[in-house]
Length: 436
Image 1 (cartoon, one colour):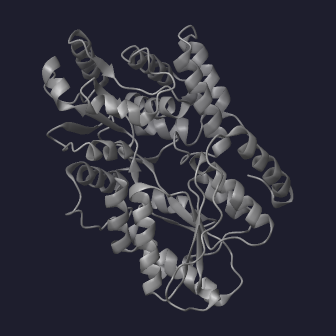
Image 2: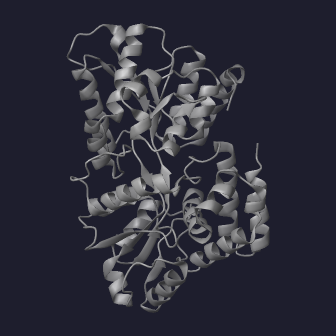
Image 3: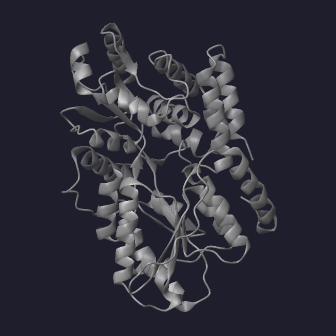
């Protein structure tokens, strides 16, 4: 993470990169508060996020409504484009200027990096009053803390180790059910291939490669191996025979993808499964939104199942908001109310129904959710008590962004270079894990 003495320089450089290197729309200026209720300026809560479309935008509107009912004005600080990169550039400039928002969308180890700079607020008073330690699995709560104190609040849980399948394609290929092991998976893939269809829908982008690899490695090695290799970054685990087997399996998965995969967006790969062009896709539960939008029903038109070998594990990607230090006591009160509202049952239900993810609270009523979400919630609760709940390294929940980024590139290089030996792939990933 940047130290604040270097942050201003980094902001200027990052701003030039965003302006010159990206083709997304320029980040819009912060929208003015639109609350019809006259409230003191100090009780305005300003929230930086990049949820600007679809169900996410509806969910933000719901959070705004809740805050207004609590007597606070909502100032929307939405920064579109760049998958959050643009938002982080703007945030850094605000922090350097000494004018941070009340809350900003930050996740994973990046939370601790911001906290180490001394700019995040202590949320322990709210957390204690709302019983967060009881409502959250310890492994998730730890991500929200710095030196034992809450500095961020989780919004949801995405399960990453999902395998999606088209029921009609499996039936046509003579595959009776979703494969539970990698041997069963490759047998099913052969049947799909012989039926003239694509076994695995994949998009050739480095984060998609890493997402698939994460599930393969977890399925091959189990949660103990995953923790050693991808959380502790243990070099012995990273160069073990288990890692060799994981890369061999990973390469075999690639052999069942189509030649047009490079550069394909993830949602287009999902569309291949929806349109009965492909049988399987390895992707987080945000893919479910594509099936829903297409009018497809879980259990009937498509199957959601844990990736082979990972039924007793759950790789999580948690969206969250970090809270920044504010000077005014009234503003701090509004900030605490925002944190409580985010963890409240009302928002947790509405947001996750819109997003396709599941509530992060362990005691949520899942009646309104679909079968895939119910299965995900059951597994989330179960793995929280068995040790099978682990942070996703592919989605920057397990290790610092610099490390996960280097490993992502190494995994993608192996995926895209069929001439690279498995042994060289193992060494490349292990070397990337040592990035500092």
